[in-house]
Image (tube, rainbow, N blue to C red):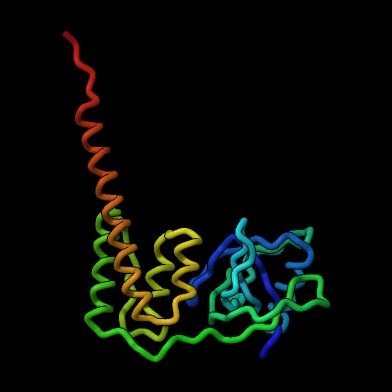
Length: 205
């Protein structure tokens, strides 16, 4: 059971997802510095007004983008594997914990279920009129659910829900609902805008 450094944030990082971070606190500059020097991973885990969650993502720094004169850093990090927090430990300037891997159940989704989720994602991208959308393939090394969810801003609560699900099949099924809801909301918003623009003309008698 490994011990890792924790980086609690109001952020959910999914496996395979990449995000930029600005590092300014001394303790986390130390954590990131050790990760850069030794190629080690640390854990990003959601902490908000509801407290620290029990499931997070082991994370690696893939690029040191910029170092400021005062020691602050801009880095690009990537989510790797999920973990469950067992107990927090002490002894370092940054928070640490003993963790255990969080693996999926063995049940795999069918090709039809994967394609249904991809189609829901394509429909959302079309309604959003997104240019050059990178649509992942269903047979890649990374889990399709996390690849798709990282491309849509679902917010921390829903992303944490997906992170904690123990089945790729369950995640894809949930994503179909979430993507459909997002597409429906965008379609209604567009309809309201079009009606407003059509009825908002100023006329003269």
